Amino acid sequence: MAKSDWCPRQSWYRLSGVPESDPQKKHGYQLENIFDEGHTIHDKWQRRLWDMGILDGMWGCLVCEHKWWDTAPQECPQCSAPKRVLQYREVPVDGEERYLIVGHEDGLVRKSLVEVKSIGQGTLRMDAPDLLRANSVEGPKGRKIYDLDGIWRDLKSPLGSHLRQTNIYAAILIENGVEIDEIVFLYEYKSNQDVKEFRVKPSARIAKPMLDTALDIKYALEKNREVPRPGDREKTTKGCKECPWQTTCWTDKESNAKDRSPSDNAAEAGEHVEHRPRRVIRAGASAAAADRTAGAPRRRRSKVAP
Ligand code: SF4
Ligand SMILES: [Zn+2]
Image (cartoon, rainbow, N blue to C red; front, side, top):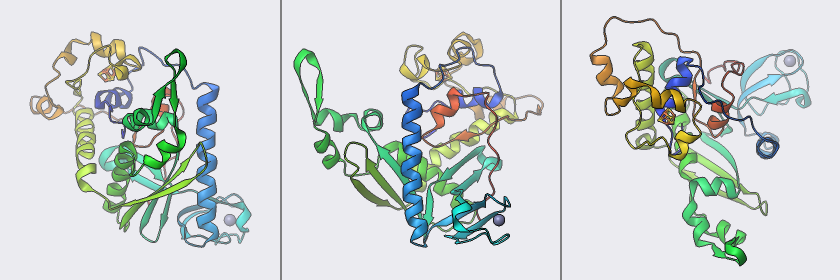
């Protein structure tokens, strides 16, 4: 959802339970490695904030399975199990009822939402291609040679998809009554493990258009109507080529009404058709992965932060 080329129609297909016409390949070994490395970096920063005694969020006890909201606990309040068998369950973001959106933020420290990101070439290729271009030269046989330190030096603000993701989460958390004054990005660079911190204020201007689109999708699902194809799509654009519903989408007659909004469709809708959405939209970086593993068992629903 936070990707710049997010297609609401694709989310609508997934939520409607339409079988994939073009199932995508499962993750390769390299991608699994990238995900695991990302998890390790998150664990490291969360552990440090926990040891500092300032990490707020949801916690779980591996002994008695108790779950509770707390600040850096040292033992389970229910069975007194020690810290080593406690797990940080992050900051659950529950916007399922209103937007069909759920997710987790990496941390909360004194009203600052914390987002940890490992930054590598892949992230920057998607989110900051100009930065890569400005720090590369053409080498032998036309190969690109990157100035890795230069890329890191010139990264001076959070990346677009990270801003969109955290602002969706921040907006939902604020609606749920969690106090948030700022969003802190901790960026760790894969090539030299250096770290940068960026701090921004939550922005309703960034979150609102995406939340409005999520409401459109929900409305279309409730009325059993279609979400139109975004006007700038071609069958051959990258997002469509990798879409699990590409064939269905481009052979579906109704989808040619691409300039109609779900609200337009709904205005003409007949009787109400009961329709239960099967899954939720995920705003985080693993949304693409979630799309690829459609059909996997649904994650356990999180509790709402107080
Ligand atoms: S094929 Fe393209 S337009 Fe259609 S749902 Fe997929 S991404 Fe969206
Ligand atoms: Zn316990």
